[in-house]
Amino acid sequence: MHDSDDTGRTRRRFLRAAAAAGVIGVAGCNTPGEGGDGTGTATEGATDSDGGGTDSPEQIGSGRSPFGDREVGGTTIEEMPDLEGELTVYSGRGEALVGELVGFIEDRYSDFTVRPLYNTAAELVSQIETEGANSPADVFYSVNAGALGTLAERGRTQTLPQEVLEFVPSNFRDPDGEWLGTSGRARSIPYNTDTFSASDIPTDIMSFPDTDAFAGEIGWTPTYSSFQAFITAMRILEGEDATREWLNGMQELGVSAYGDEFQISRAVADGEVSVGLANHYYVQRVVARRSNAPLATAFTRNDAGAIFNVAGACVLDTASDSTLASNFVRHLLSAEAQDYFARSTFEYPLVPAVDPIGRLPPIDELNPPENVDLSQLADLEETISLLRETGAL
Image (cartoon, rainbow, N blue to C red; front, top):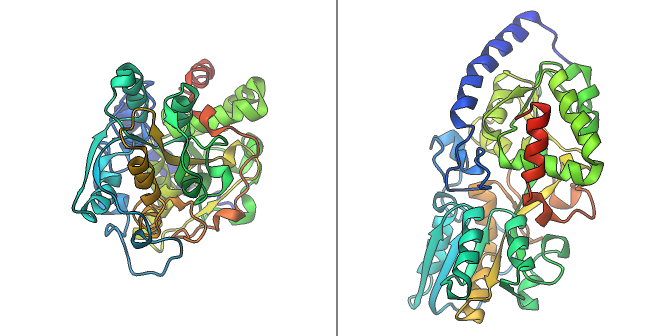
């Protein structure tokens, strides 16, 4: 089904060249927002509607109302303990992305006040460490498991109550109960359905450099923290040498660089490239507004390309009221909050009774690799060095 039309290839090369100028504009920015890693590379905030990206209707997607009318399972807020008192929440998720949800929870209770501080997850971890025992923070809300794992390893978290932990499956929470996931993102392969069929997309990420049909047709985001976490997973699973060979092979294939994964998803839909590497929700944001776009999502199996990472929360050791803090985390797992994540961020809800929205398989049909410690994915220093060594960055 691969289209070899020379005119189409010429148009795609022209569009990619134009997009390259945009890559220069975002490489090196570190906007406070989703996915910031403190490395000086482009962050998730560049396009997650929370850190300085364009606020176009297509990018935001549909469902900006926090709670819709679809029927969902799970435990409602009405069934949860009331919240009373003041709570300081350090949020590595941007205000434009989750502020609506935090405000909804706060407004439910007349005697409850949330004092949020929004910044990148990496900056907040550093701030918590610097503040030490004097930190005012009660809850840390992170875009990734790595930041949560860092605080747990440094003894800055409290064990969550078992009744809170049990809201999500064991693979989406810390084995020692120090943190849990609240929503998830899967690595995926967006592809143009006018060029490829589902059977054309390999289920093994390591075989992509050897797929001749992808020559000049694939895009990636080497400055993007989610891509860098994916490469980190590859280093863990396949080793340094195999990862280096993969990076070199992709460049020999003629891969095109984009500034972020929303750009890639749009580029695939527009035919600039025919396949890409991106978190699943960027594809959903495109198809939510362009239902006829020739865009679909494929998933690899049991490899770095199938990594499933989580946003999540923990109660800090400085929490003045551990019960209040734990119950706030519990509210992030309510039916209403889980539905919010599905509708407004297009992430995977982690409470099994709440289904995702969009052209997505159920979470239990995904095939992420086993025995990968998600907290390791935030350690990007060696990955960035490898990207620079190979010329990918």
